[in-house]
Image (cartoon, rainbow, N blue to C red):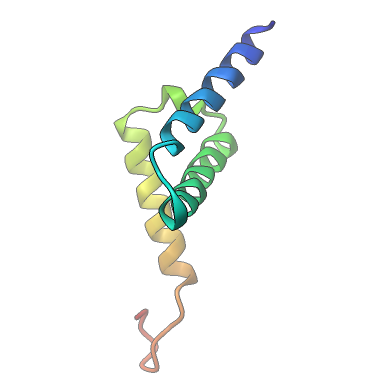
Length: 80
């Protein structure tokens, strides 16, 4: 088993353990949020299990900007 295989197994185990505490719609939404974070990390060449607070803060900022830019505008032209 290679280092990458061990890393992948550790990440899968961490994801499964985290999701195990949720059921129903909460699990569905948490899984979606987690998938978005994992994709964000991958796009930046970052291994999710080595993320620090600063990475999470950057992710949150990115999500705020993404949602703000994709949010429908109110009739007055300002984001609602």
